[in-house]
Image 1 (spheres, rainbow, N blue to C red):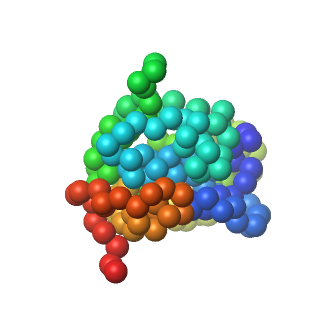
Image 2: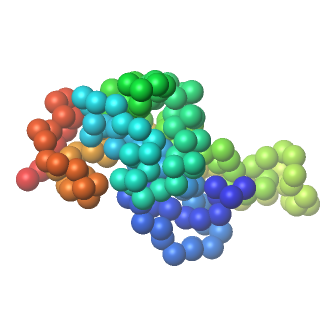
Length: 178
């Protein structure tokens, strides 16, 4: 799948390829960035085109991400002249771990995680599968400790990076230490 072929950081800059290590897909990267953007726009709706331009991403790819975010109930999407996107859940209610599970299509770290398609003769008898499953669970447990509210602590900096005007911080979100 094309969405699994590059490593992305959640701040938008691509990392150099690290080989076959676990990777955050472009899809998840765009989902997180979109939610951060919408979190900084609590009093108005944003469009896919606007978000794509600010985040320097493809609007057609972002449309697919927005569709999934709407299906899972994280954002509200309204069509029409007064339409647009906005958060449908409080930022502190959107767990990074939950979001990762909803946007990553394949969490299998190795072929043997899936019963079909593994032709390894050691499948089912190799202890590495259990170790990798434990590592994946630890990774997800760390993500579960954070929410979207944690990702937008420094709203002033995020707005600067996105080329937005400074406004009063969004009420109810934690602020970065000055």
